[in-house]
Image (cartoon, rainbow, N blue to C red; front, side, top):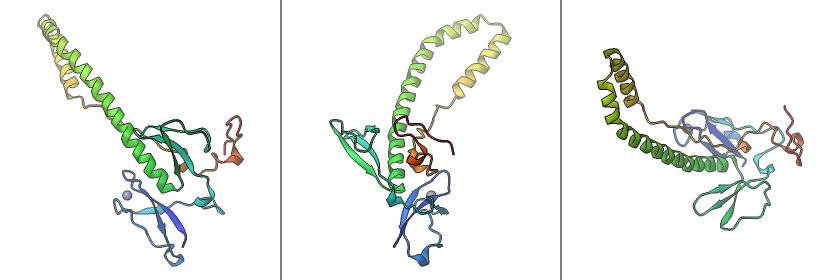
Length: 188
Ligand SMILES: [Zn+2]
């Protein structure tokens, strides 16, 4: 029974998963296991299937730090283990794990910065109040608007947005299109 990869089309989900399908099931819709929404088959260039591709190799240590070796057979740094990503689903799962840990680092950095801003602001507040007492009514109205806008500000959030190029099967990251020594890539 052939193995097929499917990708959820709901942008907020985007789950990738695998299914073994009989030929008679080839056209059956395969709802997303996470959000139960519609999905589409990931189609590889004709004549290829996922088992023809070399695995994507990454090195990972116990703390979850990831290194990306330049070659699949690169020597393993001390404390790291070799992880092979063989299928789309493997790569998707890996990308999600990296995004979660990168997101945690970003959140820690944002809250560290926010704390520094809060400390500075609380130090400046008495000075600000004294300065406002000397302002004209127009200046004070302007300052109050600026302070209200500042207080209403939401904490910044951002997505880590990590993804592996291996998922982009457009052929440009395949050997026929690149020079191994220089890393040069042909445009399609
Ligand atoms: Zn989904």
